[in-house]
Image (tube, rainbow, N blue to C red; front, side):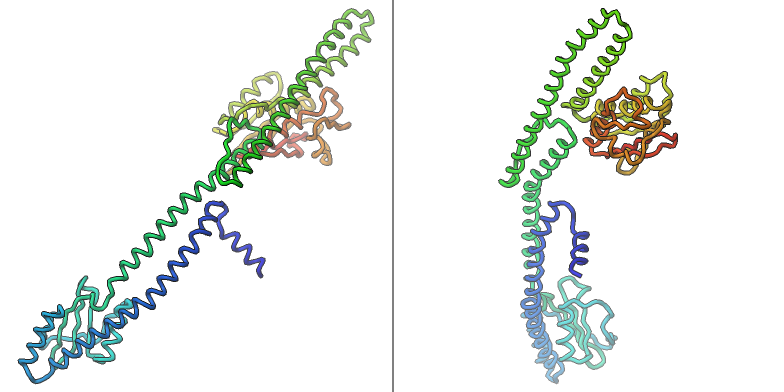
Length: 439
């Protein structure tokens, strides 16, 4: 039961830290104001209203007793005193209709208190109206063949402090919540900035500058992230520089070997050794490409339609068909995406004769399918072929020109953009590579 309740609370609560913190700050404040308001309303306002209403009804009852007496001179004197000293307006309406019951409507606490006191004093021989006039209450008391009409100020039964109290209980609460919003924004902004920087770095984007800010704990976490980022960047740069140096150093002796092979009289042996040297050069180039394909490249919003069209122009003599939805714009590293698609197309054309590309947009992603009509890959090898330097012996592994980095590079590029690659059987009976890139 507790577990189910906990799940319900998690679904109801907002996901962002700012709104959760705001609830933690604002909820006790609002509950305190509600409790204070209830206590004030019940203990002070209602009691004050009852006392004032009881006092007023007693005055009206005294007036009524005097009015129904036989002494006409005393009657008029009392009425004049009430009109003068109590802000009453009293008159007798002779031979006029008297409402039998009160109107059916919602009664405020003030109305209910007045009704209760009048009923205990006059029974059902009364009628009052607190809504027609803004500052005045009309009261009618049945007398003989007419009624006694009394107008008196509303403040005699409604404590004026309730409005002041409502104002003072509401405005400070709103002010405190606004201050809390400002402070919470300032406290959560460094966390958001740190998360964005970590996301960009995780996708392989180049971060120009990152300045830690916020509370001590957040600032320390940001400092540690920045130090980690710099260490990883240095290691990546060292790896690229090392591979560049190795590639440069190895190309020189390979070039000398080529020159020496050209002077050999045994052409068959020279041809075999030349093929081996070319394969070594290809391997060096792919190793270097594997380490350097996304170095310091910044993201930008580009048209995927233009990228695919530009790539397919390089394969004019190849059978490549593509179908792309219009206006597929996405924020990516263009050269890396081009490298990924070129690898997949080269891979398809190496093992097959035909490649088809299809791209579409969903609610949250852009999906790209690259199909070929080659021999395909066994399903059990799907997870292995995207590993660096992995080559299978059968079907697609019969071509020995590669070193097993094409799919691995493509997979790294897509994952660095926050997407994913999956392999499946193609409608062309070859391999289908499905790319999903988040918008």
